[in-house]
Length: 89
Image 1 (spheres, rainbow, N blue to C red):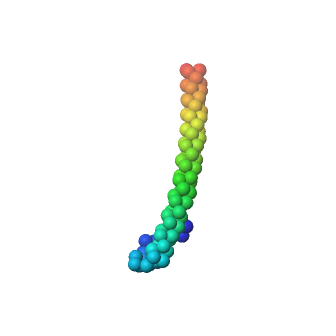
Image 2: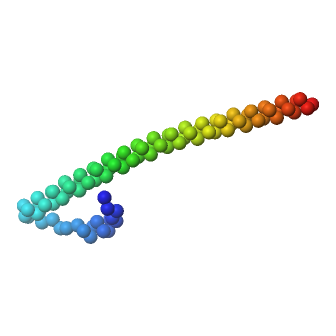
């Protein structure tokens, strides 16, 4: 779908003559076509959002795992330092 501003969209709009049957049919078909385009765009955005949410959760888990391992390493280093210090004293 094209990226258009509201001003560009408004400039492309046509006046609908509600007195003519062909004009009403044309407006209806255009509206129906546009609603399908919006539906497809919405569906694609929804899929992208779900994928991004899943990726975000996976990254959070990986970050938490990395933080936990770093904390474990820091704790081990502190314990080793305390043990060495106690041996020296």
